[in-house]
Image 1 (cartoon, rainbow, N blue to C red):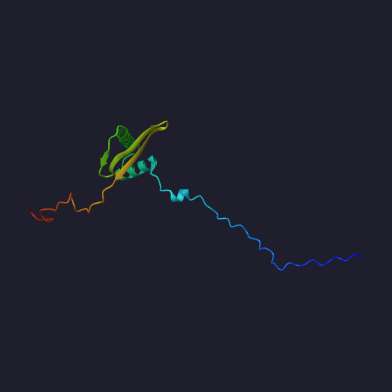
Image 2: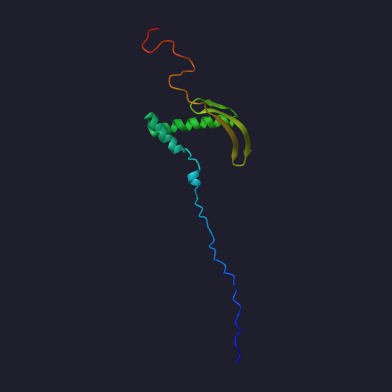
Length: 128
């Protein structure tokens, strides 16, 4: 009868089973992207600020935005102190429309008492 030869046992430890590490990547683009002001939101804000009917506000806001768009299309810069100074840096025509690179410069808010850097000549309640 044949006897089975004992096999040499390896002294090396078996390789540890390594679980693959999977980083769960969540779609945080919605969270990391800055919020955008949409026309509906703008209409709501203007209606609240002016206490006007949304239909009246819609007509005024849409007309204003159309005029701003026409000015940019014509190559004009825009200088509105509440918004800032907008200039066209680059513009090109494509199939979908005009692509513009704009630069917006906003001035720092001035303190309420300071009017164009001038001081009042008389104190409040003082006759001039």
